[in-house]
Image (tube, rainbow, N blue to C red):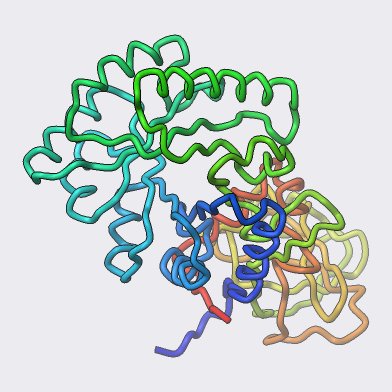
Length: 363
């Protein structure tokens, strides 16, 4: 079916492969790459992104949900898949059926997995997560040794990895180092009890600069998708979002626009209506703040972002703006970091936010 509405997320798979090469060169050949593809590969498209990375022989994929892992298996991905969020209360059978590796951080889940593995007549590979200060998932450091002692009762589970997650690797080196110390104590306790410990992994993209914390695997999520706060970064953004001008009109000075009339023209103004809004994942928080790129010039968003449309000021664009002209909403000229700053959020939320009604085009 032909696409009628022009708003599109463009995914540059060549840039994705380049970013993977940059990360590999940075961490060296002895460190494996766990490629996070959770959240529809950070909004880029789960299956196509995973297939591209699989062709480059990443060591493991990271998903948040068992359902995401199942989707990858259905697409023919045979590489190990780690379910970073665990299995919930209903996922034990599914991880065995689809050969997924669950993250384990509580004894109840471990027991369910052990029972299921016994019924399948197999030993299930698992990774353990210790909470060293994130306060989200993971066995609390103070309960870790007791957890390991109980885990020894489950004969059908094999510990093939231990990890933690840094809370402030990009902003607080002191606390990151403290988390690392807690992690290494946890690993030593596991070794004393003859658990694995298998592959150790703690470093996300923000922690890649800590050379001693790369360990056996790095979980280089944002880096793979080309998002960096460094102005001279070697990384290339993988996502570009475009639309086309839907309608152009002239307004007199004093006219207010959009819901609540939060912006008034101070001069005769030419406005372009664009077919994109918060239902597509273009945040309402960008109202009267963001800019778009048309004919080589930046154009400010005027008034509130609507569900399906935004208005931009093209008065000063030197080339006449007409319906059908291409508009860059996010890309080389309008980076995700800039939109995130305007919206009071982080680049992750911007790139993950584009909804399913915006088609992905891969190149």
